Amino acid sequence: MPAAKKPASALEPAFRRLLEAVEATGSHGWLSTAAMLLEGSASARREMTRFARDMGRLVRNDGQFHTAAQPLIDSAGNGFLLVWACCGPSMSEDEHAGHFEKYLAAKKYQLGMHRGTVLMFDQSGEHLKRLIYDSSPVQHDPALEALAATLKPITAREKVPTRAAIRGKRKKRGR
Image 1 (cartoon, rainbow, N blue to C red):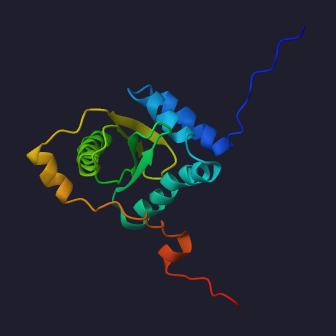
Image 2: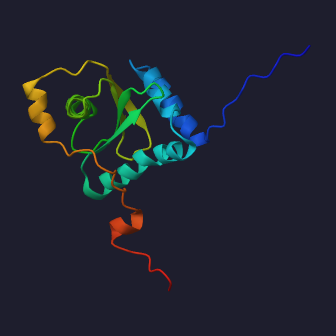
Image 3: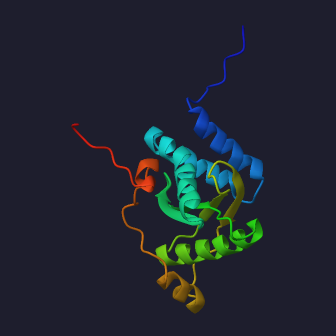
């Protein structure tokens, strides 16, 4: 009797590359992060593969780093904070990592979430540089409370501007 074929998932190539990049970091928390990414629907996965690259466009436009926080709920009902971050040209990778670690801790505090990850990409948003994972419990901390108070609240996520919008061009409808 021939061996049964292994079940294969129908992951889009860009999403598979994102998962492989997460695994390749070898960082603490890579498996939890990959599992959270896999919990998303097909459309959410497509969006995830474009999000860092679209933020990279903003970095190229203004020369600043950019972050976007995405609170998620896993199938067991536990919160998980996913932060997409694109580095800017003005700081080193280590300086960015230090800044993003503080941001992750403050955002977790603000939202009351115990687990979270920063996916830290290069300026282009194409290459995952680091994965920063934090599963420390949220406890009262006046310093984190003060930092969290300076952060924007999570609302409906803003759309990342298209290339045409960044250049000031707009498509005219119906013409």
